[in-house]
Image 1: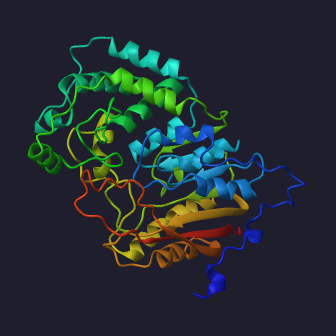
Image 2 (image 1 turned 120 degrees about the vertical axis):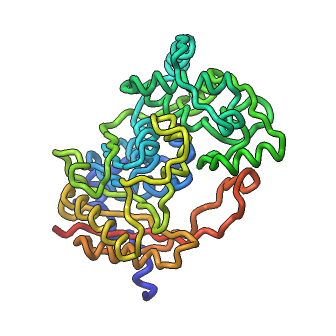
Image 3 (image 1 turned 180 degrees about the horizontal axis):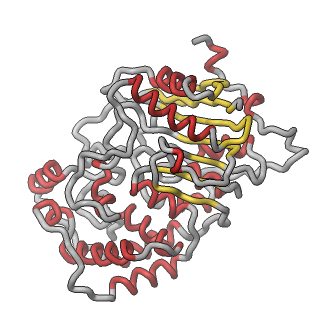
Length: 394
């Protein structure tokens, strides 16, 4: 690939219809804006930075243009659209992803969240099911787990209001994480934040260090997190999150046409989204042990098969888009699959009719706080990522 093909020519990505003087752009908002706090409601190990979709939409999107993310994950693209006053729809097959993303489109107040949680916790119910076994005894103090199960049961029965959607996301984000100095911020024994530890490894880790789970005041954690994430939230915009498989045309809500598609598909070889989120998946009604099979995901049997699966999604997306709609994809790879991520992505787009405008190196996935000191057995070097820009030439 020559150097010109790798460069990002921003002038080619400007929104249709003229200059800024002819239609007002959404206001510029940075990732450190006060209203950005809700985006961090639940850590998610495959998340990309809010600045990525914000930058694209701030520079190019016109007011009223709809934004789509067919692999919405924890809803970062949707939240960027909300910050800019743009309507959006997100689709993801993962129950955890859909639950977190739904909170990003909701509005409530700390007072309402705490009042709701208090009401649920004070409704004593002897029939609330509590998971049993060695892992659960070491992962959570029995009183803390009882409170979590009370909340789980209530939210499984009814999670239709904005307050319930946000409370659910707050609980998902606090289910597991590191032990803190001072007041706890998480409900669990020492854990990673972005993914759930596997039971056998975790129990061995805790037993070797004689680390017993602390009794955590569930309501106090909810109050602390509510005040943090809801101190300032953006104005609500029209939007929807759909838990579905974007390889199927039925996953896409009828009656919408999109001008912008900003997304990051699963990387080739990354098949552990559900097992790695198994505790959060349990909170959403899943099993109380690790489930290693999940059918509603892209097939990873070969690069060619994976590319063809992606092409299905891109064709479904195109059917929902305006002519000249723009697709922006961040894509990378994992270390144990020695494949060229850019080649896989280009091949999938070529099979679906999208015309690639340019590709730009996006660096590597930030290590951030990878928590190697907490549970990671080894730390691997991130694979370089790419941002690919394409247009739908219907």
